[in-house]
Length: 402
Image 1 (tube, one colour):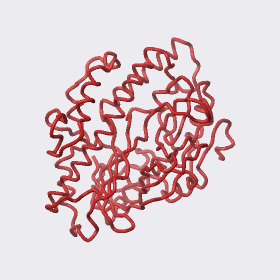
Image 2 (cartoon, rainbow, N blue to C red):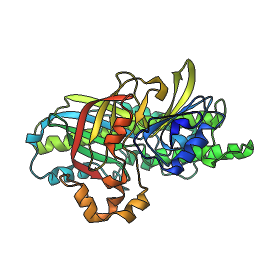
Image 3 (cartoon, rainbow, N blue to C red):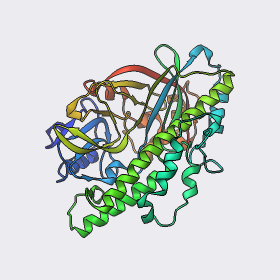
Image 4 (cartoon, one colour):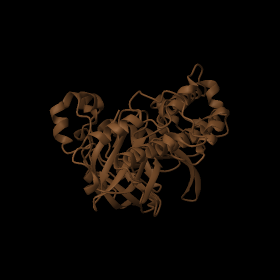
């Protein structure tokens, strides 16, 4: 179906498959009374909770918490090191083990709360971001609505990866330079803030007798206490997520430094960007809330990261500032199969074949992340040629997953 034929929708999906269920979600979003302009649909679009992943949603005086999602601030970070392909050993198993030793993955976390006040995690000096995060956390009003919660866990999960589609990779670019690239978010606390806000929005919709096509499209109105509490928590979780990625980036640098017994350097810092977030922005002469659910800001000259999958290429891109997309681009390849469908469709042998040449897990626990579960990244990139230009093309040689 031509998504551009849907009222109040602009889509960059030419040559990319979009499932029927996602189309229905897009129609529901575009018809909401709070939507301030056409919904921008990215080429990695697929079914999500309430709103499609791969959407940019402009709203007037309101935010839809489920559209932001529960991994608030989830995003990417990448840096080019001074290493080249020739520096890497034939087997990357020891480097992968060293990274996994420093960065807890899956449900694992640090044994004690991480103190980023002074020397920083892993003995590497960091900016004093941790001080501000601690202080602001103590003042978050939305925490009073959460009930019983393990606050210590918030700080034990700083500098941890999580599971699902989160990853840490070593990649080679077109000049055989080694890059560190990683994908993670705000961990359990972001999920908890998101779930709490989704619940509050549903309650408000019921109280105000709003008739919605999907209860997960319920919104919070600007000027209300619930809205203010959510935005405060949202902004904090976005900063927590960015700091979490910075800590892991330093951990991987330490692992490489120890492996090569030298400072591996950071020759070019690409970006630390969110792709699940909401911010107030000006578009077409109006201040609106822009929610990027699985989408990256791509203002003119702005660097971003578009990953493929465990076995496909990724890209460092520069935004073209396309106003029609609210200066946005895709956040990745986008799923073509659900996790359940992927587990049914593929075997461990398929996983091994599709990740040949990559040092990574090759067991049943990550079959749902098999490359074939994702859309063709080359088709996705072609569909958004007027949104971004490619600066670097990366191919992973090592991938850590939870």
